[in-house]
Amino acid sequence: MQKYAMSLGASLGALIRPRVAALALGMLAAAVITVEAFAQAPAAAPPVAVSASETPAAAASQVPSTIASVALPRDLSPWGMFLNADIVVKVVMVGLVFASLVTWTVWLAKNLELWKATRSGRSALAVLNEARTLAEANARLGASSEAVARLLRTAVHEVQASPHPDPESLKERISWLLERVEAAAGRRIGRGMGLLATIGATAPFVGLFGTVWGIMNSFIGISNAHTTNLAVVAPGIAEALLATALGLFAAIPAVVIYNVFSRQIGGYRALLADGSALVMRLLSRDCDRVALPMSRAAE
Image 1 (cartoon, helix red, strand yellow):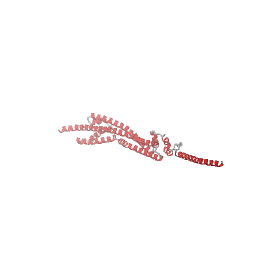
Image 2 (tube, helix red, strand yellow; image 1 turned 180 degrees about the horizontal axis):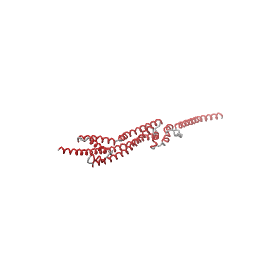
Image 3 (cartoon, one colour; image 1 turned 180 degrees about the vertical axis):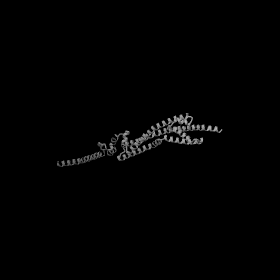
Image 4 (spheres, rainbow, N blue to C red; image 1 turned 60 degrees about the vertical axis):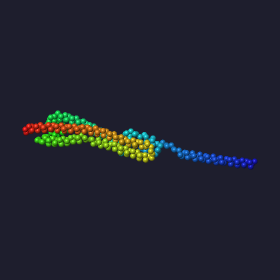
């Protein structure tokens, strides 16, 4: 009986030991798999408090998963983009706004100047058309500072300085003097046109310089943040493109105003040419009146 019990215990021990070993190995394998699964799972990012002095780029470099939430609340209005822009981009923007103010100032001043000069010139042309002699026209125009009146006074002064001139020589001298007066009046009325031409030609390139500088800073921000998230570079690119917009805002009106004034100044110079022609006509009449009695006396 005792031998039978010992034999049965040995048989049960031989049966249980492999199962216990298998169960231990299974539990160990499950534990290893669980540890590896937890090690590979991404940890949830803890909430990050961003201080007022911390830039979005710095916050993005610390916690990549919160880049969008940190960078997007920036003010992307034109004034906000100007305040957040780089100092070089700010200088470009201020210069372009100043150039735009100069353009509209020249437009206002030149409009008034051309309107007044054209109106006075047409009145003087009407007087020259009605006058029969240089003396009559000079008496009616008086001491006016208008360009056509200066043409007339130039001819009168030359006639007075030549008491007994040869008519052809007198006409030639007065023609030269009238050309110089016309040129001086044309230069005077064209003041400010070079400024408009310069602004129209250079403002787009100045704005492009600000854009290139701003985009370069945006790419530097990408490098510092070690991320390609668009939220990091979008504000900087928007600020850079604002410089291009301001460049076009300054250049387009300058070019349009320059072309308009070019046509108006061309019309004013034609008016001066008409004034010179009328003065020469009056001079020719006076010379004929002087030459007629002399020819009768010679007969």
